[in-house]
Image (cartoon, rainbow, N blue to C red; front, side):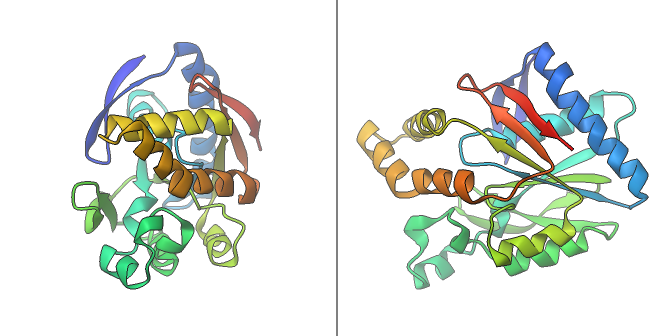
Length: 239
């Protein structure tokens, strides 16, 4: 299936094979829907954690699309974690702006507060503006009964981040070969206007350490997905 999706305000062309949809994505969404029905909760919260370059934002947007298309699936909504970046003024004051995207550049306490609010009927979720390069408050009205919060650090083995687990009903992690992620991330920066040398330097300074940290320091998830060198997804484990 070829599809154009709106991801974080940008149009993104994505492609998923019918076999992958039937063998990976629909079974996972049906698993989440069953969990939601059994829980009796007003809202079910799913964490999707993965290193940069695994296509998690596009994937969760595709899941939301499938939930609208497939009979029997409740509405699902993707909520990016990027809206909880500290503002640039704070990053500059703390000399962290060059490392934007690292765990230390997020407001974890603010994220925890919003996650607790997700049990309410309506929540307004912040979103990262990729033109202003700062968060925009109350950008997303949360209305779906199942929300998928996606980001790099949701399963980080760190006390501040581990505390978020109290708000999570199901966790999903995507693993991938580090070499494939490097190629994807460097090419992404080149497509964004950087030279080959600038893109490589950015990877070594920011993306590379983040990839290594996510892959090496994340806690085990309930569901494991594996991204192949070709960017396809496979189920590694589902509990």
